[in-house]
Image (cartoon, rainbow, N blue to C red; front, side):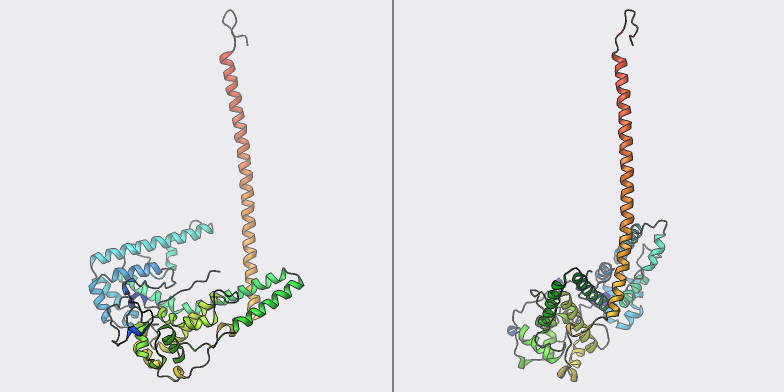
Length: 416
């Protein structure tokens, strides 16, 4: 199972990435007190991978739209609801011809890419006679009815598709992580079945000891609490904890100076907490679980702080959160090792599903083996026919040669 670490911008990535002209609240900071302070060149910061299958297309559309001054100006004046409702998409009709031409080309490339994906999938299933154009309907981030032109409908569909898909991202991630944990346990139990009684007991003892070792870690501060942020202030930023100031903290960790704390900037704040629990050198510490812990911390803070649910934290939202009781007196934070992700029934159901999939794969493998054997038999037949044909040709050539060199009698007649 492939588990990816995704640093995610939320559903307004398409448009909020364009708001680079917004200025953060000016705050005076003595950068000389910050350890290893480095100037940040915002132009070099790459936008995060959204995890969407049309991520590259999304980024390319953003880059092209950024070049149109009219669209850029309208965007700066638009609010979130105008963007979500599709009202902003109508402004696409007024962008320059040069920009529209580039967008048209991007759409043609994306449609071509999707058609290739469909064809590859259908070829793998050995399906034929399928209308590929009709199958484009399953992709809702572009208007498949007009594959050659990028219209206002395309921009509207792209925004809404990204909004919908990314809203469900965390839920999907939770389900995938649950499957990951069940697969780990399934493989462990299957391995135990291959061992003798004595070896099995040794492995079980080792497993329990590793669990205890992993659970024996320092206290984890509640993500987003004053204690957690002060620890970052002191140990990462190198500042006096007695001088902790939320405004200054926000400015320090708004890495690209766009006036927001986005998701990857938030996730970076939890590194110190994660290092208390996970060490890549330790056999008992799973790095996939560490990244899931980081994402859950980010998810929790966003739910607590992000008032308008655009998954970008403004200075006002951040300061308001520091006034809450939970900021000063938070509940204890449960790490993943303190949680149960699946029941025995769920594990058995998952194992049954795996068994069915394995049987299906075995069935397909047997069919492929039979096809291979049949092809091999046909190949051998052809080789035998080829050899026989070659022998006949040789015999005919030898006969012809003998006729040409046969001796003649006194009258010139052949002796043969």
